[in-house]
Length: 368
Ligand SMILES: Cc1cc2nc3c(=O)[nH]c(=O)nc-3n(C[C@H](O)[C@H](O)[C@H](O)COP(=O)(O)O)c2cc1C
Image (tube, rainbow, N blue to C red; front, top):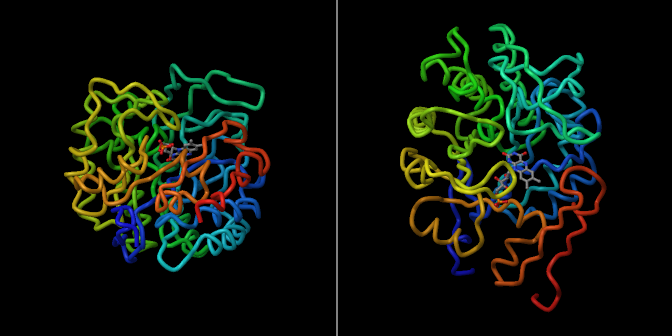
C-alpha cells in the first residue's frame, strides 16, 4: 500500500472505502436531450472508478430544475433505467457512487423551461454581473418568477422522489447541491431571498427550504447515505449574503442533528468551475469544517501534496479533484506512482463527443 494518507481507508456513511480521493460532481452535458444517461457517460465514469468516492454530476430533480441541454435527470423511469448501467460500471469493491441532486432556480432561462416562461426562484430578482450561456452565445439572465408556497412544497417532494430514484438506479447515496448559488443557496442568502413568508426574512426562515429538502430526502434514504455540498466563500452567480460566516456555521451545526454521510465544502478561491481571487471576507474551510461532527470532503484547487496536508491537519477526511480528474482518468493510480499529470484541454468541457471527455489517455506504460 502507498504510504500516502490519500490511500488510507475511511468510513463514508454506511461504507468503508479504500481511498480518500473523490471525483467531485462535474457537469459534462453528455446525456440525451431528455436527460437520460448514455453509453459515453458509462465509459467516462468507469474510467474514473479508481476514486474512493464518485459523486456523479449535477442531476436535475424536475424538468424545470435544469439550466442547460444534455444534463441528466432522475425524475422519469427512463432516466432511472439509463443511469443503472452507468452506476454499475462505476462500482468496484471499495468505492462508493453517489449522485448530486440539483435544482438551478434562477440560473435557468426561459429558452430551456418546459413552459417557455422565465425560471422560478425564491424572489423575482435577476442574477447581476453574470450572463447565461445560450447556444447562441452569452445573454443576460432574466428576472425569475417567484415560487408560490405550493410550488416550493412540490420541489421539496421532487428532491425526495429523486433520492428514491437514485437508490433504484443503484447509487449508494445522494449529495444535495447547496453550493454555487443554485436553488438551495438562493433560499439561504439574504441578498437573493426577499420573501416575506415563512421561507424568507430570518435565518431560521431562509434555512427552512434546505431542511425541508433534507427531511424529504432522509424519509427516502437513511441519513448516512446523504451528503451535502456548500461553497460558503463564493459569491459566484451573485450569491450575496450579508453574513455568510453566521449563515454557514449555523447551517452546518444544525446538520449535526442528522448523522449525514458527509459535508462537502468548496474552498475559498473557487468561483463555480474556475479559480478566482480569494475575497477578504472568505471563511477558512478549517473553521467551518470544525463545526461538523462527521466526515468532511474538501474540494478546490488541490493537488496530491496539498490534499495530503489537508488530511494530515485534520481539516478534511477526503479530498475532491475536479479538473485534475477530467484530464487524468486514472488519477489515483498516478498519485500512487507519483506519475506526471496530463493538462486539461478546454475543448469539450461542456457537451460534445468523446473528445475532451473519454479520450484522455491512461498512464504511459513506462510507469506501470
Ligand atoms: C466542467 C466542470 C463542471 C462542474 N460541474 C459541477 C456540478 O455539476 N456540480 C458542482 O457542485 N460543481 C461542479 N463543478 C465544480 C467542481 O466540482 C469543483 O468544485 C471545482 O472544479 C473546483 O475543484 P478543482 O480545483 O479540483 O477543479 C464543475 C467544475 C467543472 C470544471
